[in-house]
Amino acid sequence: MRKFIYLFCVSLLIIGCNDGDVITVELDFENTFQSCGELVFYKTKTEPAESLSILISNLTIDDIVETRFVDTDSVLVELFTPSRSIALNGTTNRINYRTYSSLPANPFCSDVPASDLNIISDAVGTGDLLITTTLTEDDNDGIPSDLEDINGNGNYDDDDTDDDGVPNYLDDDDDGDNIKTINEGHNYTEGNGLMNAQNTDADFANGDNIPDYLDNDDDGDGTPTRNEQNFSPEDHNPANDITNSAIGPDYLNPAVNDNTPETEYRPHTIRQIFVVLARVTNLAIPQLSQDVLDFGVLEDTSVTTDTRNVKTIFN
Image (cartoon, rainbow, N blue to C red; front, side, top):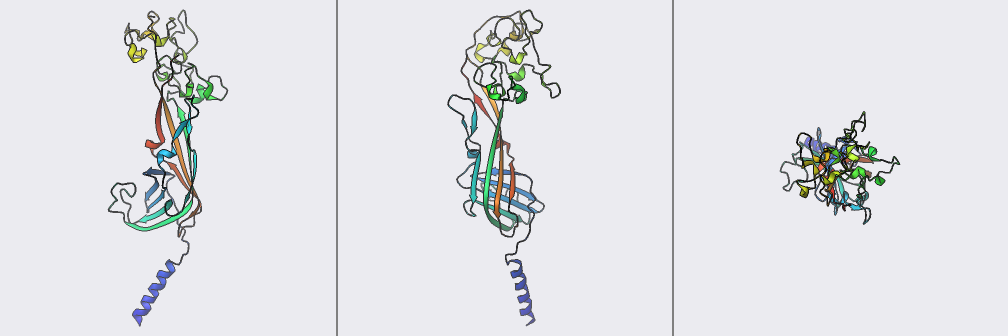
Protein backbone atom coordinates (compact mmCIF):
# COMPACT_ATOMS: atom_id res chain seq x y z
CA MET A 1 0.00 0.00 0.00
CA ARG A 2 2.87 2.38 0.93
CA LYS A 3 4.54 1.59 -2.44
CA PHE A 4 1.31 2.38 -4.33
CA ILE A 5 0.91 5.74 -2.57
CA TYR A 6 4.54 6.62 -3.51
CA LEU A 7 3.96 5.79 -7.17
CA PHE A 8 0.72 7.75 -7.18
CA CYS A 9 2.46 10.83 -5.77
CA VAL A 10 5.23 10.57 -8.34
CA SER A 11 2.64 10.32 -11.11
CA LEU A 12 0.95 13.48 -9.81
CA LEU A 13 4.27 15.31 -9.90
CA ILE A 14 4.86 14.22 -13.48
CA ILE A 15 1.37 15.26 -14.54
CA GLY A 16 1.77 18.58 -12.72
CA CYS A 17 4.97 19.37 -14.65
CA ASN A 18 3.46 18.56 -18.01
CA ASP A 19 -0.04 19.95 -17.76
CA GLY A 20 0.57 22.72 -20.27
CA ASP A 21 1.37 25.49 -17.79
CA VAL A 22 3.54 28.21 -19.33
CA ILE A 23 7.05 28.27 -17.93
CA THR A 24 8.78 31.62 -18.44
CA VAL A 25 12.20 31.09 -19.98
CA GLU A 26 14.44 34.04 -20.79
CA LEU A 27 15.81 33.66 -24.33
CA ASP A 28 18.98 35.53 -23.51
CA PHE A 29 21.10 34.97 -26.62
CA GLU A 30 23.56 37.24 -28.41
CA ASN A 31 22.05 39.55 -31.02
CA THR A 32 23.83 37.75 -33.86
CA PHE A 33 23.25 34.47 -35.67
CA GLN A 34 24.90 32.19 -38.22
CA SER A 35 23.56 30.51 -41.33
CA CYS A 36 24.18 27.40 -43.38
CA GLY A 37 22.60 25.01 -45.86
CA GLU A 38 19.19 25.46 -47.45
CA LEU A 39 18.49 27.30 -45.07
CA VAL A 40 19.19 27.27 -41.33
CA PHE A 41 19.62 30.30 -39.09
CA TYR A 42 20.99 29.43 -35.68
CA LYS A 43 22.57 30.73 -32.49
CA THR A 44 23.93 28.89 -29.46
CA LYS A 45 25.23 29.51 -25.97
CA THR A 46 26.98 27.38 -23.38
CA GLU A 47 25.73 28.71 -20.02
CA PRO A 48 23.17 27.25 -19.99
CA ALA A 49 23.59 25.00 -23.04
CA GLU A 50 20.84 26.12 -25.42
CA SER A 51 20.22 26.83 -29.08
CA LEU A 52 17.70 28.62 -31.22
CA SER A 53 17.36 27.66 -34.85
CA ILE A 54 15.09 28.52 -37.76
CA LEU A 55 14.66 26.11 -40.66
CA ILE A 56 13.39 27.55 -43.95
CA SER A 57 12.65 25.26 -46.87
CA ASN A 58 13.20 26.17 -50.54
CA LEU A 59 15.42 29.14 -49.74
CA THR A 60 19.17 29.73 -49.69
CA ILE A 61 21.32 32.51 -48.30
CA ASP A 62 22.27 33.36 -51.88
CA ASP A 63 18.60 34.11 -52.56
CA ILE A 64 18.56 36.56 -49.66
CA VAL A 65 21.57 38.57 -50.90
CA GLU A 66 20.77 38.27 -54.62
CA THR A 67 21.15 41.49 -56.61
CA ARG A 68 20.23 42.70 -60.08
CA PHE A 69 21.15 45.70 -62.22
CA VAL A 70 18.85 48.68 -61.79
CA ASP A 71 18.41 48.78 -65.56
CA THR A 72 20.15 47.49 -68.67
CA ASP A 73 22.30 50.61 -69.10
CA SER A 74 23.35 51.00 -65.49
CA VAL A 75 26.30 49.77 -63.45
CA LEU A 76 24.19 50.22 -60.31
CA VAL A 77 22.62 47.20 -58.63
CA GLU A 78 19.79 46.69 -56.16
CA LEU A 79 18.60 43.82 -54.00
CA PHE A 80 16.28 41.47 -55.82
CA THR A 81 14.12 40.94 -52.72
CA PRO A 82 15.02 43.24 -49.81
CA SER A 83 12.23 41.91 -47.57
CA ARG A 84 10.71 38.44 -47.15
CA SER A 85 7.81 37.32 -44.97
CA ILE A 86 7.76 33.59 -44.20
CA ALA A 87 5.18 31.66 -42.20
CA LEU A 88 6.80 29.29 -39.72
CA ASN A 89 4.29 26.46 -39.80
CA GLY A 90 6.08 24.14 -37.39
CA THR A 91 6.96 21.57 -40.08
CA THR A 92 8.67 22.61 -43.32
CA ASN A 93 9.43 26.02 -41.84
CA ARG A 94 9.93 26.06 -38.10
CA ILE A 95 11.76 27.48 -35.12
CA ASN A 96 13.36 25.18 -32.54
CA TYR A 97 14.42 25.92 -28.99
CA ARG A 98 16.71 23.22 -27.62
CA THR A 99 18.41 22.59 -24.32
CA TYR A 100 21.39 20.29 -23.86
CA SER A 101 23.22 18.63 -21.02
CA SER A 102 26.32 20.16 -22.63
CA LEU A 103 26.58 22.01 -25.91
CA PRO A 104 27.93 19.85 -28.77
CA ALA A 105 30.80 21.13 -30.88
CA ASN A 106 28.75 21.24 -34.09
CA PRO A 107 25.01 21.03 -33.39
CA PHE A 108 24.07 22.38 -36.84
CA CYS A 109 25.07 22.14 -40.47
CA SER A 110 27.50 19.25 -40.23
CA ASP A 111 27.56 16.77 -43.12
CA VAL A 112 27.81 14.00 -40.53
CA PRO A 113 25.38 14.39 -37.60
CA ALA A 114 27.16 15.01 -34.32
CA SER A 115 27.38 11.97 -32.04
CA ASP A 116 27.27 14.06 -28.85
CA LEU A 117 24.07 16.07 -29.26
CA ASN A 118 23.02 15.49 -25.64
CA ILE A 119 19.59 17.04 -26.23
CA ILE A 120 17.44 17.39 -23.11
CA SER A 121 14.46 19.11 -24.74
CA ASP A 122 13.50 20.17 -28.23
CA ALA A 123 10.52 22.51 -28.54
CA VAL A 124 9.18 23.21 -32.03
CA GLY A 125 7.43 26.51 -32.62
CA THR A 126 5.49 28.57 -35.12
CA GLY A 127 5.33 32.25 -35.97
CA ASP A 128 5.85 34.84 -38.67
CA LEU A 129 9.42 35.40 -39.81
CA LEU A 130 10.52 38.67 -41.42
CA ILE A 131 13.93 38.76 -43.12
CA THR A 132 15.17 42.18 -44.22
CA THR A 133 18.35 42.82 -46.16
CA THR A 134 20.13 46.08 -46.89
CA LEU A 135 23.05 46.59 -49.26
CA THR A 136 25.74 49.25 -49.07
CA GLU A 137 28.35 49.58 -51.83
CA ASP A 138 31.52 51.63 -52.06
CA ASP A 139 34.83 51.68 -53.89
CA ASN A 140 36.98 51.04 -50.80
CA ASP A 141 39.33 53.84 -51.88
CA GLY A 142 39.78 55.34 -48.43
CA ILE A 143 37.51 58.35 -49.06
CA PRO A 144 34.09 58.34 -47.36
CA SER A 145 31.24 58.26 -49.86
CA ASP A 146 29.75 61.54 -48.60
CA LEU A 147 32.98 63.33 -49.65
CA GLU A 148 32.63 61.94 -53.16
CA ASP A 149 29.44 63.93 -53.67
CA ILE A 150 31.38 66.52 -55.67
CA ASN A 151 28.43 68.77 -56.54
CA GLY A 152 27.08 68.56 -52.99
CA ASN A 153 23.48 67.84 -53.98
CA GLY A 154 23.13 64.73 -51.81
CA ASN A 155 22.87 62.42 -54.82
CA TYR A 156 25.99 60.29 -55.06
CA ASP A 157 24.96 58.73 -58.35
CA ASP A 158 25.40 61.89 -60.47
CA ASP A 159 29.05 62.56 -59.59
CA ASP A 160 31.27 60.93 -62.21
CA THR A 161 34.53 62.84 -62.65
CA ASP A 162 35.89 60.71 -65.50
CA ASP A 163 32.51 60.19 -67.20
CA ASP A 164 33.00 56.43 -67.42
CA GLY A 165 29.53 55.56 -66.15
CA VAL A 166 30.67 54.66 -62.62
CA PRO A 167 29.87 57.31 -59.98
CA ASN A 168 32.82 58.40 -57.86
CA TYR A 169 31.68 56.66 -54.68
CA LEU A 170 31.80 53.33 -56.57
CA ASP A 171 34.78 54.23 -58.79
CA ASP A 172 38.15 53.12 -57.46
CA ASP A 173 39.77 55.31 -60.13
CA ASP A 174 37.87 58.60 -59.97
CA ASP A 175 39.78 60.45 -62.67
CA GLY A 176 40.05 57.54 -65.12
CA ASP A 177 43.84 57.73 -65.37
CA ASN A 178 44.35 54.01 -64.59
CA ILE A 179 45.97 54.84 -61.25
CA LYS A 180 43.73 53.74 -58.39
CA THR A 181 42.44 56.59 -56.21
CA ILE A 182 43.80 54.93 -53.09
CA ASN A 183 47.31 55.19 -54.60
CA GLU A 184 47.08 58.88 -55.56
CA GLY A 185 47.81 60.40 -52.16
CA HIS A 186 44.38 61.69 -51.22
CA ASN A 187 45.64 61.64 -47.60
CA TYR A 188 42.16 61.59 -46.11
CA THR A 189 41.96 61.85 -42.32
CA GLU A 190 38.88 62.17 -40.18
CA GLY A 191 40.01 65.50 -38.77
CA ASN A 192 41.26 67.20 -41.94
CA GLY A 193 39.21 65.46 -44.62
CA LEU A 194 40.95 65.90 -47.99
CA MET A 195 42.74 69.15 -47.16
CA ASN A 196 46.15 67.52 -47.56
CA ALA A 197 45.44 65.70 -50.80
CA GLN A 198 48.49 65.37 -53.03
CA ASN A 199 48.65 67.74 -56.03
CA THR A 200 51.85 66.97 -57.93
CA ASP A 201 51.63 69.80 -60.47
CA ALA A 202 50.53 72.54 -58.06
CA ASP A 203 53.82 74.46 -58.46
CA PHE A 204 54.58 73.55 -62.05
CA ALA A 205 54.27 75.97 -64.98
CA ASN A 206 51.18 74.22 -66.31
CA GLY A 207 49.92 73.23 -62.87
CA ASP A 208 46.40 73.36 -61.50
CA ASN A 209 44.46 73.22 -58.26
CA ILE A 210 43.13 69.71 -58.89
CA PRO A 211 44.32 66.97 -56.50
CA ASP A 212 45.96 64.00 -58.19
CA TYR A 213 43.09 61.62 -57.47
CA LEU A 214 40.80 63.83 -59.59
CA ASP A 215 43.44 65.00 -62.10
CA ASN A 216 43.84 63.10 -65.38
CA ASP A 217 47.23 64.79 -65.98
CA ASP A 218 48.98 64.59 -62.62
CA ASP A 219 52.25 66.24 -63.60
CA GLY A 220 50.71 68.88 -65.89
CA ASP A 221 52.96 68.01 -68.84
CA GLY A 222 50.15 67.88 -71.36
CA THR A 223 50.14 64.10 -71.70
CA PRO A 224 47.29 62.36 -69.87
CA THR A 225 48.48 60.18 -67.02
CA ARG A 226 46.97 57.05 -68.54
CA ASN A 227 49.01 57.55 -71.73
CA GLU A 228 52.37 57.76 -69.92
CA GLN A 229 52.87 54.00 -70.18
CA ASN A 230 55.85 53.84 -72.47
CA PHE A 231 57.42 50.60 -71.25
CA SER A 232 54.50 48.31 -70.47
CA PRO A 233 51.28 49.51 -72.11
CA GLU A 234 49.84 46.01 -72.07
CA ASP A 235 49.18 46.12 -68.32
CA HIS A 236 47.27 49.45 -68.47
CA ASN A 237 49.14 50.67 -65.39
CA PRO A 238 51.30 53.81 -65.70
CA ALA A 239 52.71 53.31 -62.20
CA ASN A 240 55.42 50.92 -63.38
CA ASP A 241 56.62 53.00 -66.36
CA ILE A 242 59.69 54.78 -65.01
CA THR A 243 62.34 56.65 -67.00
CA ASN A 244 64.08 58.32 -64.04
CA SER A 245 63.98 56.22 -60.89
CA ALA A 246 65.07 59.20 -58.78
CA ILE A 247 61.80 60.97 -59.62
CA GLY A 248 59.47 58.03 -60.03
CA PRO A 249 56.79 57.08 -62.56
CA ASP A 250 56.67 59.10 -65.77
CA TYR A 251 53.15 60.29 -65.03
CA LEU A 252 54.59 62.27 -62.08
CA ASN A 253 57.64 63.49 -64.03
CA PRO A 254 56.95 66.64 -66.11
CA ALA A 255 60.24 66.20 -67.97
CA VAL A 256 58.88 63.04 -69.62
CA ASN A 257 55.74 63.32 -71.72
CA ASP A 258 55.98 60.48 -74.22
CA ASN A 259 52.51 59.54 -75.34
CA THR A 260 51.34 55.95 -75.79
CA PRO A 261 47.57 56.16 -76.19
CA GLU A 262 45.58 54.00 -73.78
CA THR A 263 42.88 51.70 -75.14
CA GLU A 264 40.98 50.54 -72.04
CA TYR A 265 40.25 51.16 -68.39
CA ARG A 266 41.41 48.80 -65.70
CA PRO A 267 38.48 46.89 -64.12
CA HIS A 268 36.76 48.51 -61.17
CA THR A 269 36.25 46.58 -57.95
CA ILE A 270 33.20 47.52 -55.89
CA ARG A 271 32.86 46.40 -52.25
CA GLN A 272 29.48 45.16 -51.03
CA ILE A 273 28.24 45.04 -47.43
CA PHE A 274 25.00 43.16 -46.73
CA VAL A 275 23.09 43.47 -43.45
CA VAL A 276 20.60 40.65 -42.90
CA LEU A 277 18.12 40.94 -40.02
CA ALA A 278 15.62 38.34 -38.81
CA ARG A 279 12.59 38.91 -36.57
CA VAL A 280 9.82 36.56 -35.48
CA THR A 281 6.37 37.77 -34.42
CA ASN A 282 3.41 35.76 -33.16
CA LEU A 283 5.94 33.34 -31.74
CA ALA A 284 4.44 30.21 -30.22
CA ILE A 285 6.75 27.66 -28.63
CA PRO A 286 5.45 25.25 -25.99
CA GLN A 287 6.23 26.39 -22.45
CA LEU A 288 7.58 29.77 -23.58
CA SER A 289 5.71 33.03 -23.01
CA GLN A 290 7.61 35.23 -25.47
CA ASP A 291 5.56 36.57 -28.40
CA VAL A 292 8.18 38.57 -30.33
CA LEU A 293 11.76 37.50 -30.95
CA ASP A 294 14.39 39.74 -32.53
CA PHE A 295 16.59 36.95 -33.82
CA GLY A 296 19.32 39.44 -34.64
CA VAL A 297 21.76 40.20 -37.43
CA LEU A 298 23.60 37.65 -39.55
CA GLU A 299 27.25 37.41 -38.54
CA ASP A 300 29.05 35.64 -41.36
CA THR A 301 31.53 37.63 -43.44
CA SER A 302 31.55 34.97 -46.15
CA VAL A 303 27.94 36.03 -46.81
CA THR A 304 27.74 39.64 -45.67
CA THR A 305 30.82 40.94 -47.52
CA ASP A 306 31.52 40.56 -51.20
CA THR A 307 32.93 42.37 -54.22
CA ARG A 308 31.87 42.77 -57.81
CA ASN A 309 33.92 43.84 -60.81
CA VAL A 310 32.80 46.37 -63.41
CA LYS A 311 34.45 46.80 -66.79
CA THR A 312 33.47 50.09 -68.43
CA ILE A 313 33.64 51.24 -72.03
CA PHE A 314 36.76 53.30 -72.70
CA ASN A 315 36.34 56.93 -73.71
